[in-house]
Length: 125
Image (cartoon, rainbow, N blue to C red; front, side, top):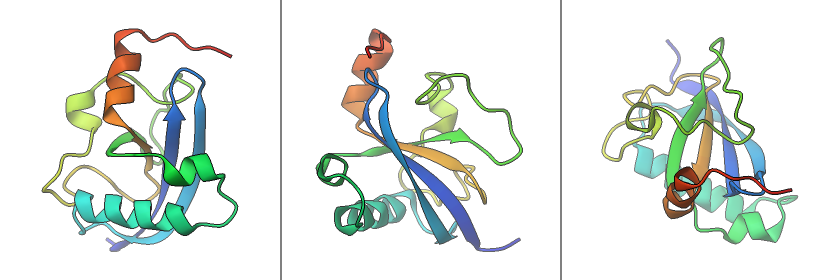
């Protein structure tokens, strides 16, 4: 089992408008903590070229597994609203302990926006 993984983080700015951008990270250490990975991603996107400024400056604070390699994908366009207890990465544990493996796709979003959308899941165009 390799310690280096390829992970995709889907930066979600708006659930209502389905506004997100996927970013791929190569060589991610799955034994780092969720907090360390979130800090790394925030730092990376703030200086990443080709990423529109609204995505760089957004206040992301939560990660959730969208799907695993070779697993079933959700029909939701942004991410599933189900299984939060199981799929939201909890602080204090490693990525691996939270079920993250090579080629996992994660959503990176602001929890307060997610809770508001989940209470009234309407999308607009």
